[in-house]
Length: 171
Image 1 (spheres, rainbow, N blue to C red):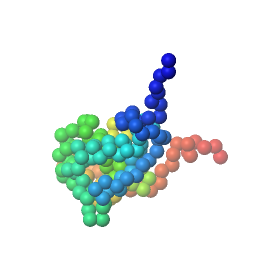
Image 2 (image 1 turned 90 degrees about the vertical axis):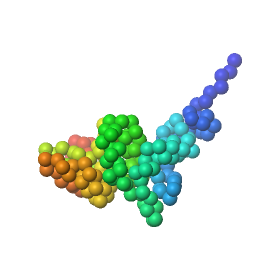
Image 3 (image 1 turned 30 degrees about the horizontal axis):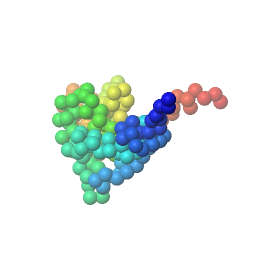
Image 4 (image 1 turned 60 degrees about the vertical axis):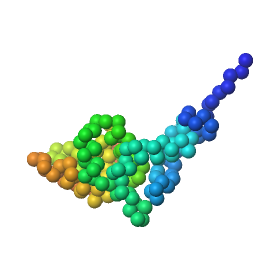
């Protein structure tokens, strides 16, 4: 007796090959989108999942400028952020902001809001700290979230990052 195997097929559509883990790029509503496709879904299903997430969790926060660049309506985001501080929907929104290049997982060259200590005040996704890719977004977010705080804070651009492996490398 032979059994039919679905190894390599997309677990969502069960038609297309899932392929390897990789970044994929596409355009939606004039926006250039970069997402990480896992090894379980095909590119079509990964794109469809992103679009569904955008429509459900981010469309009302993102303004699409004439040049196709995304702009965040930070006051609207702020209401959502306060209402869902630890929600799964907030994580989905952060995924959208990362895929549109508004937030980044990479510190170098990007912006952070830091209070005394220094304690990072940027948005976080589960365990990861997120960085603003544009100074204007960091300023808008800081004004929205931290204008009425009693502690001091500042916005910094990160110029250089030395990774652990580079620091521990033998000479």
